[in-house]
Amino acid sequence: MAVTPLEFPADDWLTWLEERGTGQLRAARDSVAELIRSEPGNPRILRLWNDVAIALGNAGGVAGLMSSVHPDAAVIERAEEIEVEVRRYSTDLHLDTDVFRALNSVSPDGLDEPARRMLARSLRDFRRSGVDRGDDIREQVRQLEARLTDLSQAFSRNIRDGRVETRVPASALAGLPDDYVETHQPDADGQVVISTDYPDVMPFLTFSTDAAARRSVATTFFSIAFPDNDAVLAELLQARHELATLLGYPNWPDYDAEVKMIGSGDAIAAFIEAISAAAASAGYREIGILQERAAAEGDPVIDGSNWRHFCELVKREQYGVDAHEVRRYFEFSKVHDGLLRITGQLFGLRFVQVPDASAHPWHADVSSYDVSFADSGQPIGRIYLDLHPRDRKYNHAAQFDLVSGVRDRQLPEGVLVCNFPRGLMEHHDVVTLFHEFGHLIHHLLGGAQAWVRFSGVATEWDFVEAPSQLLEEWAWDADVLRLFATDADGVPIPVELVDRMKAAEEFGKGFLARTQMFYAALAYRFHLERPADPTARMLQLYDEYSLVRPLPDTHFYAGFGHLAGYTSAYYTYMWSLVIAKDLFSVFDPDDLLASDVAIRYRDTVLAPGGSKDAADLVADFLGRPYNTEAFKAWLNR
Image (cartoon, rainbow, N blue to C red; front, side, top):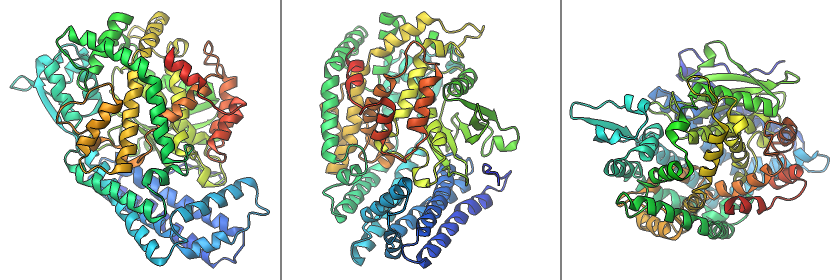
């Protein structure tokens, strides 16, 4: 029987969500019951456990997506409830001694390597959940996990619903692109509204020549979800600490890092210090240049309201790169189509737009594509692109797993959720689109596993950004960009302009690396220390790591959504970048469209999903263990 993608409803979303969400939960419970009834030691137990994981993933996938993108508040509310049900049931499962006993009865002897790996990782998960502890410990774990689900949802919801607007004089739009100005008409008082949505706030902070207005907008932006998230975050950090210590770990970072490439909390701290030291020389040099430029306009300090503005001026004046000039080559629809063309050529894929109403399942903005291998026509999966902002929608950029692929059972389906403008894009938006599409490709290409646990982006969590960071390199190559980056007259972006853009991009990597280490340190230290005064501790970490100063009376941490998902492991972005730079060293920078290396990378790193350790996948591609040489060379050139 052919494996086909999901079918979405025309209108009755609540009924469909109930059938898909709670229906898959019922399927999981049925498989668990059958698993427990099975004869001890029967390898069929492992297949039933796979069925459980597939069903739970399906229920959680649709609930997590709909709670983030659906325009109907009732659907969002029910999706959030199903998310809670899925997480609570998963917690109960991993504390169920009967399920653990059944899995533990299966001998690894006679199993193939993927099955042995599946069994070992599953048993490890059970032990990390406390299944082998006493009844009282297991009950405490169950209660803590339920609290963590509620608190994580509340933290993210406060950010999602925390959209705020700042009113500034219409004159503050001086310096902004014409299309931006046209969409921000003044009211009767001569004021315009700048929201905290990324397409609103980022261009304003970059191009507005009104320092006071920039400061006002930035102050609002860096206090999203404050003070609502203060109490939520305090409870969240405490509950994670209690869970880790209850299970025998000294703290949350050690518990969380145990199953990542980095291995321990101490190693996180050491990595943050190492990158901070490596970036110090370039970072201080760059901040000095920004300070000199800012001083000419009476700004004595580089802070969250002006670094983008003065960085843009330095790139324009010293490197000849004017973002206004650059953006006219990046019209959204051309970028969208160019991305599909380039990744198709690179990885041997074909994208065919879904023609009927299911192409726009939950909103008219959504476009859908069936993906197959170009040479054989073999179906791979389906992608959904939801790329423009709207009310109640997830307000950052991320890839969501709607369906995890399982060989001969279900095709992988992934959703790209972003907030890009509908007209001209900044080049950094183009880079972000390439980055997030890297996750989507990984989800699809890695989705032909027999065991759903290893499907798609299922490697250690601190490797998952590497494939996406690698794909960013194609957004900086002139030959690649000229395939789709054309102005209104169809003239491709000049090679010389791209060369200047690349030179200008080199400026800032030192102080921005230090900014990333501030984020990483905040995530790590907040989980390790659980500060009573998060604002005061945030300011201390600013002093220690960031070369960009904070704005007075702002509370960045309250809107730092990664504290919910990445917990103490925000360091992973830089850890992955080290690996991505090493992976890129194998490609020919003079011919990035050559498919031979890309196909080998596809087959050795992406297609295996999580069926091997990330270090082994990388070594298979490089022919050696990864190292930091390429990263250091990039950082210091």
